[in-house]
Amino acid sequence: MATAGAVRDRLLALLEPLVEQLGYELVDIEWASAPRSGLLRIYLDLPAGREGHIGIEDCETVSREVSALLDVEDPLPGAYTLEVSSPGFDRVLRKPAHFRRFVGERVWLELQLPRDGRRRFTGTLVRATDTGVELEVDGQPVEVAFTEIGKARLAA
Image (tube, rainbow, N blue to C red; front, side, top):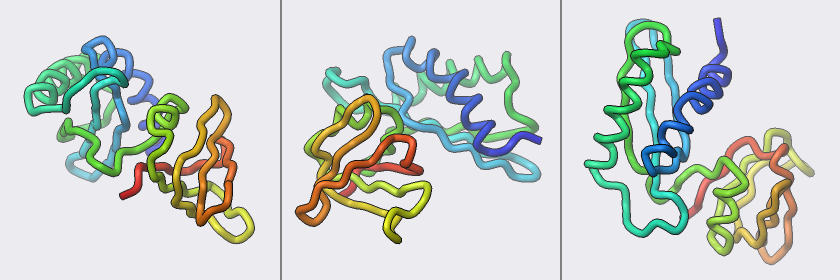
């Protein structure tokens, strides 16, 4: 049986091109399997440079197209519920482009492994490159490679 991470990666590879073709950015997905019915959540946003906000019509459009693709490809075992929504104020940062888009904003990072006994950092995103980010945390610079990041989000 495939791990949740493997299922998530397979779904991202399948759905991201479709969502981008529809004119949106696939921010993240969540897959929660359950004995009788799973839950697939898709978070989408407008791509960088496109003004406005995600509305119900956008979610309906993406839901209809994603549902059709999932029916054909059948990547998920059993029954599931599909939810499509905007990412909210604490959106996930998953790719270098996500980080570059939000330079100057407050972010929260959780490292895969502790560094000097610490796994979580919240600070201002100072810089983002193709290999990592620099935060200012409590007035001190903290550089983190993307390979070290377990989770990252915008912070309030």
